[in-house]
Length: 217
Ligand SMILES: Cc1cc2nc3c(=O)[nH]c(=O)nc-3n(C[C@H](O)[C@H](O)[C@H](O)COP(=O)(O)O)c2cc1C
Image 1 (tube, rainbow, N blue to C red):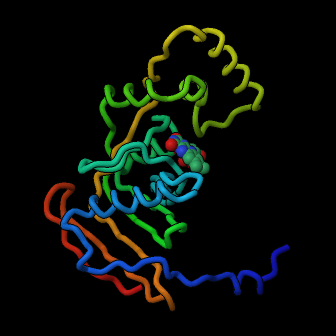
Image 2 (image 1 turned 180 degrees about the vertical axis):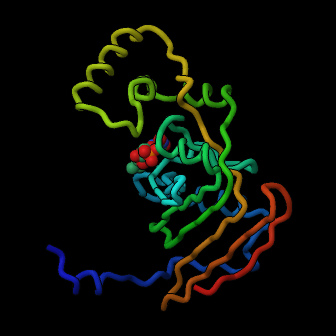
C-alpha cells in the first residue's frame, strides 16, 4: 500500500536546460527534431513513444501509447490496425492530440492536429521493414476486439508462421498508418521552482505560418 504521504513528497527539481524565445525556430518541427534526436541519445526504453488521444462519439476521450515512425513537415506518423478503437474514433473525428512524455530531459511536447491515412504505398514500405513476427501479428490480431482466449491468438499466429515461413507478407488492408498534421505544438521545458518554460506554436490551418506565444507555467 502506498501512503498518501509518499506521493506528496514525490517531486524533483527540473534544472537540465532552459528554453528561450531566441532559441525558437520559425518552424516548430525543427525544434521537435532537435529534441527528438536528444531523446534518442538517452537511455529511455521507448524514446519514440507518444500518447495518442482520440475522442469517441459520446465525446469520451481515450488515450494509448503508439510509436512515432516518421516525422517531417507533413506531420507525425504511426501505424496501427484500421479497425481498432482508435481508428474508429479517427474515422468519426479526425481531431487528435499527441503527447511526448520526455521526462529524461525534463521535457514534454503536446501536439494537436488532424489525422489522415498515409498512402497504401507508404504503409507497405513500412510493413516490409517490420520483423516477420510483427507482420504476422498485424494479420492475426483483431485489435481492440474481445477475444475468447490467448490460446486462440497464439494458435492463429503459429498457423501463419508455418504458412508464410518462406513467403513474403503483404500489409493487411485493415492495417496502415495515420499522419497527424499539426495545428499546434507546445514545448515544455522544466525549470527550477516550477517556473517552467512553455511555448505554444499555432497555425490556423494545417498549412501556413506559425505564431508563437509564451505560456505561464
Ligand atoms: C510502448 C508502447 C508502444 C505501442 N505502440 C503501438 C503502435 O505503434 N501501434 C499500435 O497500434 N499500438 C501500439 N501500442 C498498443 C496501444 O497502446 C494500444 O493498446 C492499442 O493500439 C489498442 O488501442 P485502441 O484499442 O485504443 O485502438 C503500444 C503500446 C505501448 C505500451
